[in-house]
Length: 182
Length: 182
Image (tube, rainbow over all chains, first blue to last red; front, side, top):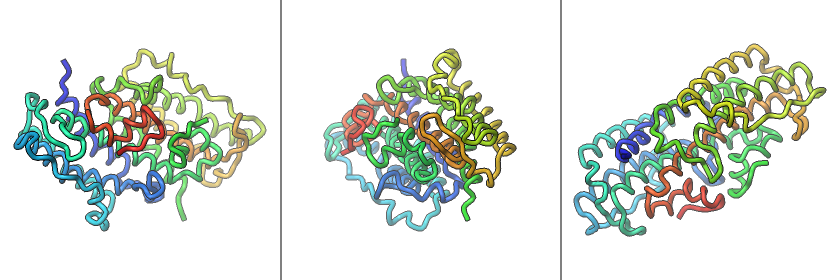
């Protein structure tokens, strides 16, 4: 039998280490480019992940456990990082995220267990959702946004690869999402 | 003045640590899904990165330095991992890649320096390329394929996120590359 809770936590606990390995101390040559035009630089992505730790996953877990579907989740501000983190260096944002993630996983363990996973809450736009879906989304949201960091890093070298760009889907898709590498 | 060689090496040396942080010991629940239908699972991506270390970046660096544009690069087999790595566990592939990457960065340092970066070689399809472009492509190729690993990991939880899929571009794009998250 699969251990959904343990396996999802396993992914969630890795993200701070992945961000450190990828980004800590990396020269700004790599980190100053957004994933797409008007998109997010690595520091914006880490800021958005911090917002999730502050305002999304644990508050919504509590709402499900305390109110079920009787009281919908508060809306989540996807751009809260823009003002909050404007002066913070990228490495400090990564460490802030790492602390919050560790605290939140510990909190989740106190709040909920396997037998709570089918409990339901009310998303303001999506309707009824389960705690299991919230936990799965926490993990996939990490993957979605860390993947965005890769597009920004690659974009920093868009001009450097010369004719090889034709083979590099990660660069072609920044110009045209449906592009297919040669 | 930017230190192109040092900054590109900085990204290249990180990839084994990123793969360890993301994948080493991760349950198969997460690692059995390809990035897209008929695509690559994380183990296939790491295998392909191993092929690059064996047959692409250093042999082509040597070719540029020894023959310039007089002798084109040998074609690179993008599917060499399929037979070679069929029995290797993912964690063993990551360690194999880490060893090869460390060796190759050390070899590159012996072979070439900043003043060689404008030397030219001949790609069998793309025509003339520089050593600088080859080095940049080595780094962006890492980013392109590691990013593919994220799509496979996310795909493993496609059904688990329930209605939240509408907000998760990394899942929507596995079905339709041009999809935009809600």
